[in-house]
Image 1: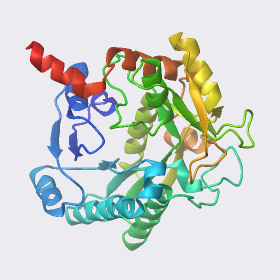
Image 2 (image 1 turned 180 degrees about the horizontal axis):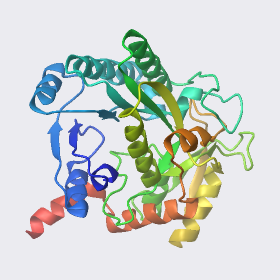
Image 3 (image 1 turned 90 degrees about the horizontal axis):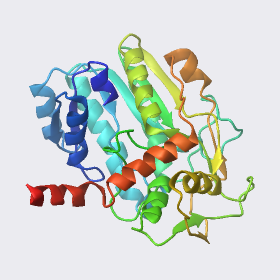
Image 4 (image 1 turned 180 degrees about the vertical axis):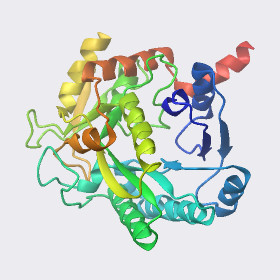
Length: 329
């Protein structure tokens, strides 16, 4: 959406494993601008080749990947194959067609247990779970790619914890099955889809014993991609950037903020820690500000407010509402 607002022409490639086609339709409705999309998988090199042959592509923003920490611990081979092999497949096709501008969706999980907070980009890397290790491996692959060919320009965007939704309430997070991320879990409890929230651990060395994370509004994150794209189109090399707010909130603090916004009580149960989780993680976003001209500006209450608006307008997510709309027609 932010790319369309900034007059870029878009081609979307998605296998829709953990996303919905309806979201693309709503982007078109809100912006009034068309985009081309393909249902395809990065592991399908023949289909990728066809897409690149049919279109003139100048740069790629690579979001594709599996992203649940707990699931990656249970299914590591699936994560390594999908995330790492899929990226290699993409880069091979990009190289074939001379497309050497790439924005990569990395993650703060590459830092593992941080040596300090706030975290700067020069902190040591040491992911503690298979999901994070796939991101760390891909970063190294992209650095090696640049060493082999200095025509490449790559931005490694280390996301912290994206939450919220578009202010229209038309586009938001609609996970398949039980949510793996905090905000959709809270909002589904608030709206009555789930009975209670599970809080993974309350014995961390933090303000209230629950994990502390740097939550960033998804629309601030989106604007960061526009800035990163502008950067790689006019430069060469590989640079990593933290996309976060620089503020950390515990799980219980986020629950309280959501209760304040929604006016609803969020019942929760403390359960065991998840394998691979860490106590606290929040960013020093100075480099992104200085090098990309980007900063986040939405606070935790606005993040919760937008997430709640999305959930109220889409109680059962995209799929059910889409089915109902077809019945009404």
